View 1 (tube, one colour):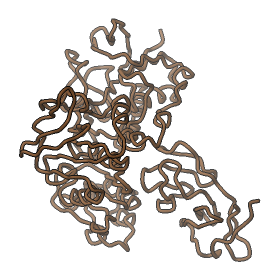
View 2 (cartoon, helix red, strand yellow):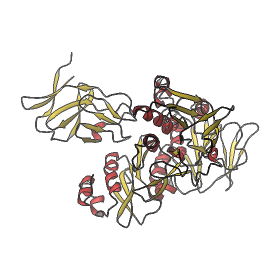
View 3 (cartoon, each protein chain N blue to C red):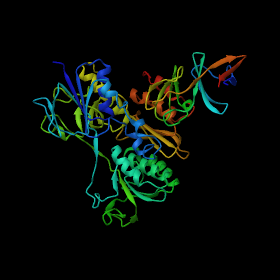
View 4 (cartoon, each protein chain N blue to C red):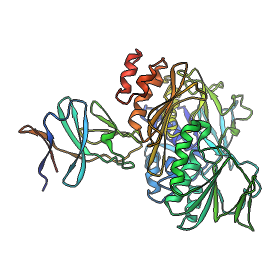
Length: 102
Length: 411
């Protein structure tokens, strides 16, 4: 059963920032897009680079290795070479903490 | 009569162009012609994940194989176009078919250089361009076998790494002091040399192959300096030359590839070129350049297609490519042939840096090893073509994007 897991404080991730967290055995990235938080698999579906080490431009995450682009809101591929979307997860601020559901 | 657009070269550039014609609403006839039997596919995996058997061929397809039929794109795969008749506006194919065109896009790419080295045609001596080439090399791979890789450009370097990763014992031979010296210079070449050395590759530099020897099949190579290296097989990667023979007699200018303007147009009405074969005028660099990389094929094919539909815009993409070797990710952006200043941000020793090739204070190009984020942030600096502050470039605490703003250019 998926459940919400606290990954950071509510203020830790500023607007325009993203970071990867270990959530119940998986590396999940969280991006702060205009104070809405989006969680997605940190591992690029192309050749497994860490997306959190790339750039976040509004709601688009860009892989640092090969330039694939994904929409952090739904995981969709916006630009290859990746072909498969990344998995997304629910993220929320609850009681002063940033939580990811997995 | 509806118009007919013919694309010669069922490649990344050609396949993407065909898709763009349909996406842009073109309802006439589209004919996609390719010498290889497969539908268009991407070549980067051929020296890396596909060569190592980690990724199936289907993952390299530009479009799913039924895409062309579903979109009313006629295909002639496995058929070579032999000649363009620009007067009659027709393409002649092997086997005699003539396909009339209103617009013609040439995306024939390149062929590997075959220098006159004795024994180059021996069995067991391979080149790598097509998936068929790659499949032949794959059959030779098994742990403990020995290979010689000739040429340490990008293809040779990646093949050498993939072979080592697959357990093959590898020796490399290159005429330069270090790998990739011609394009990246000696400093970056040293870093790449160190990476290959770490994986116990035998590195033979400043030497060239005099002959491939063997009875019926390659057994060893000898070099001009007298080295003899036994091997089970060899892979030769000594560069590529553009394929433009079919345009002979058309009046299309050919000089280091097919010469086109920033709209991918040749000087002959109705004939366009894109991808590896196109020596295109680049408005930002103010000169013609020819690029043999994935991103250029991906973007320039569609740019040419839009030009054919009279919806074209100047093609001024900043060239960019990557090269994965072992666990290391190298990326390059921009275009440079010479530089008066080489600036490093990060640590070459730790293999974590981006380096800038500057001329007159402007960043012409950047190369990164394991520092892709900074490389991407350098692209707008390159596009801006304005002098930037050197100390900011090298200061890791400075976000490169702010330097673009400081130079007064859009990101």
